[in-house]
Length: 315
Image 1 (cartoon, rainbow, N blue to C red):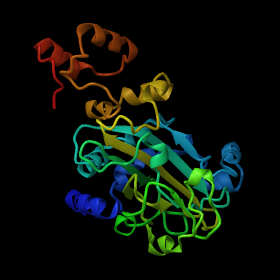
Image 2 (image 1 turned 30 degrees about the horizontal axis):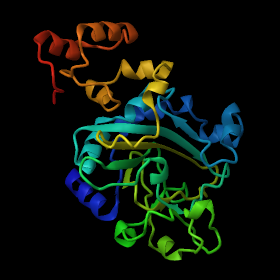
Image 3 (image 1 turned 45 degrees about the vertical axis):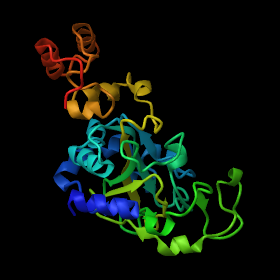
Image 4 (image 1 turned 180 degrees about the horizontal axis):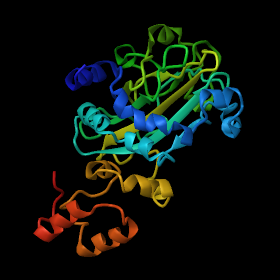
């Protein structure tokens, strides 16, 4: 599927599944460093890895947030293929990454089976918008194969859900849930579960979906199973009300410095670094940046300052 087809599917259904979108050789450097974050399947199930207890009892306990202990995983979060996909789906070149998480799940560690829901309540202080310049995008990236028995997300096409209001947000399968100030439907919606589509796929698969797309996590049933993935979120730069992680709050961690010194100019722009030609860049700020990031090649920014081409961001 090319990017135009992906955009059409995403606009129509609210999601698109792209099997093997990241080729194996481009995924491999990050996969080789998964052990810096998570136990292997054997390490967890045999309890040979001292970290195994962390993952017990809470479906979200297996999440690590950017910047990762693995520089390769951090770079994968802004891989050029993912950036181009985000630009195509958001229909915008001026975009930002606003959250990046790596996630490990293990069979039997927790209850990963979720009710049908949308994610907008912890992705924006407003509500989702489909207007150009204000869109937001979620992605799952599979770091290993995710067949049905390893708990792929299930999604429902917006052709079936577009008329559902912003509240309630959670739709259980059966009657009787309720609660949370009316955000959980008290009546069951088995029809949503009958319409769900599995996003099972091989390593490198990308599942891209909108904030207003209904989806849910599913349980892991494979014996001694493990699922490794990334959850990435991009938005148009103008949608500044869409936030999950504050990069400045994490920008003095050793992993951040390792990432910055290996990232491309474009990858840094996704985190809010002004592009060459932006008025922020002066001899003084460049000198200070050289002290903070001694391994970062500042020549693209310096060249613009020396040439005098300042006053508006370059493209």
